[in-house]
Each structure stands twice: as structure tokens, then as C-alpha cells.
Image (cartoon, rainbow, N blue to C red; front, side):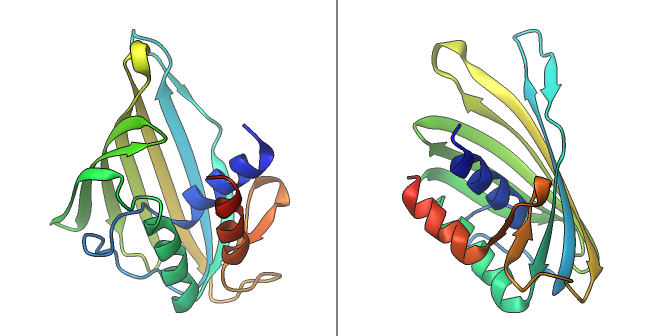
Length: 182
């Protein structure tokens, strides 16, 4: 994977809980300020259901109301016309999303469960499969935890995301990169 692609994917995963159409997405806005986000991905290693977990991707992001919506709108564009089934519902205090989509020619099925208040913390757990051609589907589990840290974002401005290794990007840079990598 080329470095710009890896950075774009990591930044998008951190910045956006999950991309859906505007009509089906009913997530509360995140509290403005500094958020710490940790994302772990586990995937099926072989047909014996052994799994392999990637090291957590840790990041910080600085949000205000405008950039929170802008980051969500940016992610929404990735699913336009790619899902044949997409539903969202509340189950108690959780938001549950079921998606049947195709990305880069690969069929994916996902169940995403959001818990938390989006003011101090939230967790997103995504269970799903990605089609791998003759190898069959690969099971994946992604867990993202986000914790609000402060109203101030030292050294950052709204829309900034600082990834592992100190790589800093802004929503405008993400948009520019995604236009180059399609």
C-alpha cells in the first residue's frame, strides 16, 4: 500500500465513525474539543477462524461543530451508490447499523454498534465480512474507542487529526488526497 493511501485510510478511520447516507445516519454530534481515538482491527487469519489483530491506531482530533459535520459529510461520499442495503435503528442506548455494500469490487457485510454519549466518550464496534474471491469471505472486527479530553486543542486547529508517528492532517488535506487516490 502506498504511503498516501495508508495515511488517508488511517485518517478516515479515525475521523469518522462510519459513513452512511445522510438520511440513515442519526448520530449525535461530538462535543467540540480534543478527542483521543484508538482503533483496533482484527481479521480472520485462516479458515480455522484464527484471528490476527493489528496494533491499535491511536490518534487525536480537534473538532468544532462545523468540522465534525464536515468530517462526517466527507465520509458519506465514500458510500454513495455503493450499498444495496443500509439500515439504522436505535436499540436502547445503542445505535445499530447494518450495511451490505461493495467497495473496490469487494462485497462487504457489516453490523456496526455505537454506544456512548458522544459528549465524553463513544465506542464503535464493527463486525463484518469482506469477500476475497476464491478464498471466500474474511471476517473482521474493528473496535474504535474515543474519549473527549479537553475543550482546548494545543497545537491543533479544528479539523486537524494527528495520527501515529506525529503525522498531522486537516480535513482539507484528506479531501485533496482522496481525489488523487480513487
